[in-house]
Image (tube, rainbow, N blue to C red; front, side, top):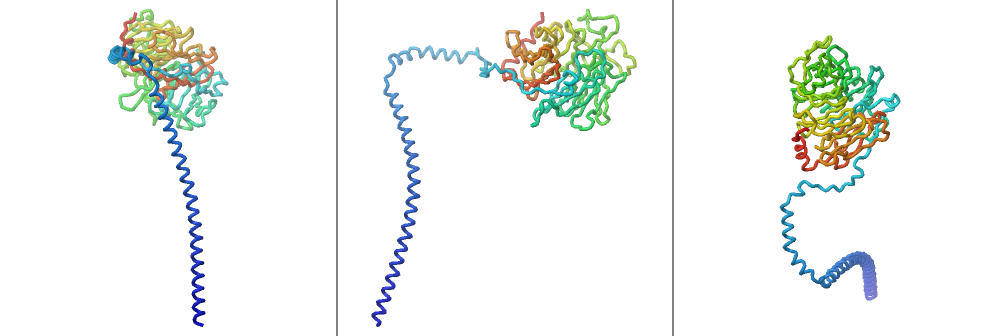
Length: 504
């Protein structure tokens, strides 16, 4: 009995052991197969990549070996030895030569020297047939301000006008809808954005008033206005400019009118008014002797049509007149005007200290060079642009720009030898004085030749942009190529040579 029980126990233990071993074998087989399959796939992928690399290296080695096995061209070694000394001598000459100093290769395609990127219009001005009379860039270079009026109306007019602004950096820019429209009761004849504050714009009106607008104010944008009085202008204001005052950071407004008066104003923004700081009158009998043919026995005034401030000398400004006079003036002049205007309370001084050779027609525009203290350009109705030196009466150079009027001329803010001129035929001619030819370096044609280009403005902050206003009410924004805005190394020295010329 005990023997049978012992036998049964052994049989049970044997069966349990075999079952446990079978389970271990089954589990182990499953794991081994899984790991083997995963490992083999990864190894095969790595092996293929390695094989491709080896094939590329072998192909490169074969190509190098093939080139080395090719026979050397006959006589090549002897030739190189013969010319070695001569080549070395020429290379040493080139190292010491200065023939190509300052040369810069231009790889740009000059067929696209200018490109029209925006054509801005205000429908209200277009419906009234108003002309663009002035354009000015904000100090940030992002906003273009545009004045509307008429250039063909010599009589007093009560026709309403406006000033419009467009922000070219605005995502939702509308070419036919201005960001801001300021209604003005009369034609706007001059415009100038503040040099430091982007929201302030000074303007001159046909009525003789000078106004400052603040574009950040949504209700009433007029922050100062001269009004009509005996001490203010009584004739159309054709030029306004911001002038730095003695206190750092403060600016006044200088205005000039066709009645012969130049007035300097300080602005009381808190009171919303102008205060007259200085007053000047240009009279024919006090014009310097170099323009004796314009001298008159009477005390008639010189109608001012253009004005420019010297960026180099805070005491100097230039004026051009309806009769072709071109005068250098001084703010510090103590000469009293020969006559007083009716009702005038302020003391008037005669500012003219030097006269340049007169033009044959009204001088529409003057602009001083930002790169040389003695140079400026002028444009008039005779179709010529004259390059002047402040030290000589006769022009250094005269360029025939157009058979029509020249309405505005302006130096490039980045190219010392480049300036642009807006013409009565609708073209803008750009001249580069570094070229031997006196022909225009580039011509911007704006469609209908019957629509004059009345004004233009380079963008000092973004020099690749040029704004041009026309009599059809449009303001075109042109993009200039690199060769029209990037200064070459020797350009300043070339400008200095031109300035040192003696006028004929």
